[in-house]
Length: 186
Image (cartoon, rainbow, N blue to C red; front, side, top):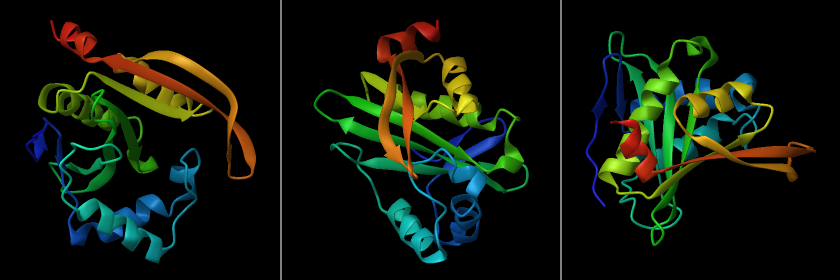
């Protein structure tokens, strides 16, 4: 599987992380409002350094468990506004998962949708994925609405299936097939 970066949109650049992105990643991953519905708690500076190191590694996206996380940068100002991730669930079955995390200062401007469309395009058109899902805490209505706007359909609502941050939580699963992505573009 091959893919080309960076990805440019009218307003954004989606690119690999660099060492100089540490401060921006720290602002994102140490913010309680950002991590509220994520699988991890706010991170310490050392944990963010480890997180950045993982984002710097080259990823072929051809094996189960690999993930490509891209920094989302405002083209006009060069500001880091968030990140999008594409995970490989099964290379054999060509399935993946999309994720997005944006700083609250940049919510409501359409950046997450603009970046996520490009990540879906990368998954389906460049990597040849058959199916991409999005999973989230059911209370995260903003992200659920974004997945719906992107054209993913809700396929599951798992009740109290994960014990996270001291409580049982429900999980929603959304999905889109490659054929649906192709039809969407017609």
